[in-house]
Length: 402
Image 1 (tube, rainbow, N blue to C red):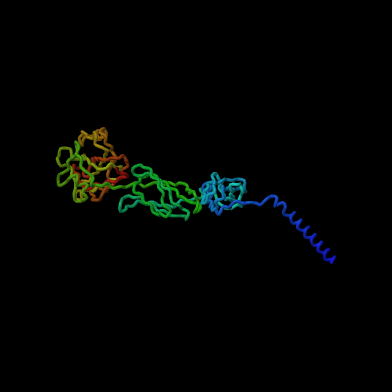
Image 2: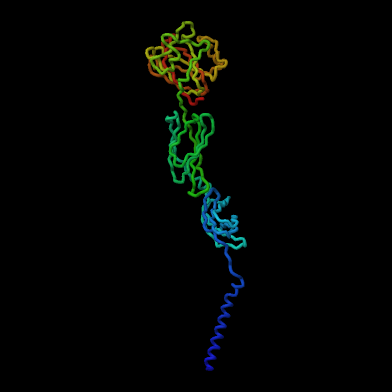
C-alpha cells in the first residue's frame, strides 16, 4: 500500500512540473494579447494608363476605414478612403514610370488594425509604347454617291484588335476645322465637304489593354485632298447684257444655247455688222454661284467648225459693281479698260492647231483660283481669220462653290 502511495506522489509531481513548463511556453503570447486583423480587400484590379494606373478595389465589409496601396516593395504608398462603406472604389495613381508593378492592398479599420495584404499586378504605359504604334493603311479616291458628287472615300485597313479607331482632322469646303473619330470597325469613310488640295491629318488610336483607362495615338500622319472637281450647274446660268457686249442672236443662234445641253444648237457672232459682235467680241455670263474655276470645256458648232476660236480669253469678277466697260471690242486697249473696271483675266488660250476644223470638245485648265461669279468670254481670233464664230456648248468645273 505504501508503494502505491509513493507511486501516486511521483506521478502527480511529474504532471505538475509538465503543466508549469507548458504555461511558460505560452506566457509571452498571452501577455501580448490576441492579434486582430482588419477585413481584407475582397478583390482588386489594376487598369493600365498613360504614366498612371487605376486600381479598382471591391469592398464587401463595412469594417474598413481606408486602404493603403503599397508598391516598390512597400517603399511607396497611396491611401484610398473607404469610410466603412461597401462597393467598388477606384483610385488613380499618377506620375508612374512606364513598367510593370506589384501592388499590395492593405486595409485598416478605425482602430488602426491592418489586414493581410491583397496582391495585384499591373502595367503602366508611356512614350516607349507610343513610339511602337503604327497607323492604319489608307487609300483615297474621289467618288460620286447617291446624295453628293465629288465625295472623298477613305479606305482603311485595320491592323490590330487593340485599334480603337482613327482621329481625323481636316478643313471642309467652308473653311471650318473638322475633328472626328472614325469608329474602330469602320473601313470606309465618306467625306462630302472638303477643301480642294487641303490637308487631312489622321492618327490611329490604341488601347494597350482591353481594360486600359487611357488611349494612345500613333504619330500623326498627313496627306492632301485632290484638286476638287465640281461641275457647275448650268441651270443657274443666265445671260447678262453689259455695254459693248454682242447680241449673237442671228442664224438661229443665241447665247443661251451655250448651256441648253444640245450640240445641235449654237451662238453665232457677226449679226449686226456694227463692230460689236464681229471678231474680237465678248459677252457676259452669270454662273449663278461664286466659284474657283479649274477647267473649261467648249463644244464647236458641228457644221461650222472652221469658225472655231483660235485665240480666246476668260475674264471674271465676283460682282458687277462698277463692272461696265466702255472700250469697244476692237479697241487695242480693251483689256486696260477691263482691268480698270475690276475684271480679272483668269485664262488666256491660244488653241492647238488640231482644233482647226474639228468637231471635238476643247478643254482647258484654268490656273487662276480667284473666286468669280460673272464671266466674260472674249474671242480675239478665229482659225479662218473671219468675223464669224459659232459654238454650241460651254461647261465649267470648279474646286469650290459658294
